[in-house]
Amino acid sequence: MDALAIKEKATSMVRSFGLPRLIITGFLLLMFVIAPFAGVNVASGISNMLTRFGMNAVLVLAMVPMVHSGCGLNFGLPLGIISGLLGATLSIEFGYAGLSSFLMAIVLATPFAVILGAGYGVLLNKVKGGEMMIATYVGFSSVSFMCIMWLLLPYDSPTMVWGYAGTGLRTTISVADYYGGILDNFLRLEIGHLAIPTGTILFFALLSLLIWLFLKTKTGTAMTAVGSNPVFATASGVNVDRMRTLSVILSTWLGAVGIIVYEQSFGFIQLYMGPFNMAMPAVSAVLLGGASVNKASIANVVIGTLLFQGILTMTPSVMNGLIQTDVSEVIRIIVSNGMILYALTRKQEAAR
Image (tube, rainbow, N blue to C red):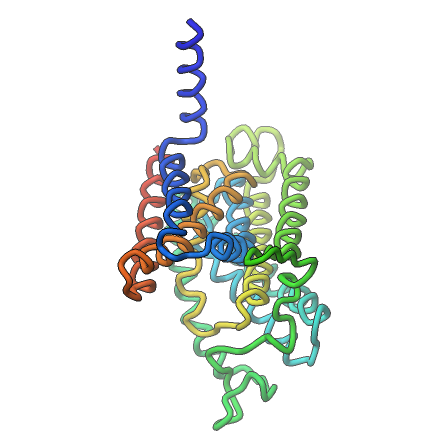
């Protein structure tokens, strides 16, 4: 009886965590076990995984508000990213540096995120049931539109405009002299080859706490009710369209903050087609963490981002060491797209 009870408890735990996530976690642990035999430093691998986690976690967190309100996964994340890019480039244009540059980038990105998010929310309210399909094309078209605007907007900072023309922004802009590493280097812990970007992780933890507290408020509860049962929410006096729009604005703002956090760690601002496919890894990460189109939590964000970025970091390094050939980029593309494909199939299962 005891053995049967233990077996049932173990089965229940596996079911609650999810067999696919258990397999992916096991694969990641296997990579860490094999790493020393492939000549890969495990501490460096963990450092890279934590760095990439900090870079991407806020972008994944941006999925949560829209899922709670029933708007589905935010494939229109490039709208938020564009808002963040506008804030970042304006911060540099106005000459801010250091922490003030990082904070001003967020402040300047906020009005763009609110305006674009509000318009995006109104659009999604008109296409209820087909939000994710419409959002995908909104994201793609906005990136293409901004490819024109980056050339036409009247920037004149010599660190950003093309040198030979004096107008139009460069494809890649360094933030090393502005807010590069401003979070990564704050309270940074280094133990041998292990480096922990404490500041970036704490910043993500702060945003996660704020979102968690917001979802516990009256407005946050109403937003969740709209996503769970819009008919009941309407009967309770909740303005469904307003709650949905608010969630889209919040998600867009988190996307704007997320790309600024990403840039300070990456070291560069990537314009033009840079944001084109950035929604896919974020969507895949939250799905790998156990979220569905109807439910997402902070835990899903943390688990999914760690798994996605851990495998994306370790697999190419270990495979390179085993086969003694530099095919890291090929393996990275295969693994990344494979996880995206898997995650999107999980989305369909969740939707049923």
